[in-house]
Length: 283
Image (tube, one colour):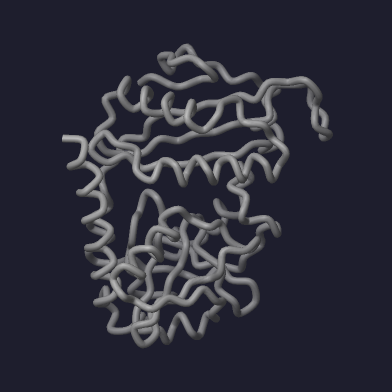
């Protein structure tokens, strides 16, 4: 495996992260996960634009321009001969003696590496079980930072309950999943939490909203409650690695008929058609 480390493509064993890297000690950095289909980085520009917004929100200067970064990531995919999977990209504030305040005159540390993986077709076809977990995160969930311990705890709670994902909620209001966004369908209207400071505005979330508009599916970006989710006709998760995954059961209660619904299926088909279009352009 080759890793992009700052401005070099190196074998993984040659990459050494300093113990005083602020990502390691403070979670002081931002990241992205970018899907690769057929050797092509999917929705690359929106991912990099979100990376830049996250970096700006924590007053971190990216080491390269977005076009330069896009070029280096494409080199990384080619060097690893990655066909299907994802690229993990992380930028920390840099290396400095441990102190909470921002150090002065240090260089950001950039790391990116491939994650080979196939599409999660079984989950997409059958759907998954979910569980409600109280959302205990900070109030800047719109920043894709490295501080993911609350998400990790929520995912672990889901696993311990025999579910595949946690649905986070603040009081009765559903926000998102531990590693995903949440949609419901009510009377053929698609609903999802608005993109504010309480959720991460997922790249796949936005792409699904665009697909819904093209398919003539009405959408509403507004909060909904746990009870509204439980009484919905359909529900699904979206994320970069999972794409569109139906939710068929939450805490033992079926969603709709307990099987993936027609609106979900229609959006899955539209998503897959978009993936095929991108990969076929490169043939």
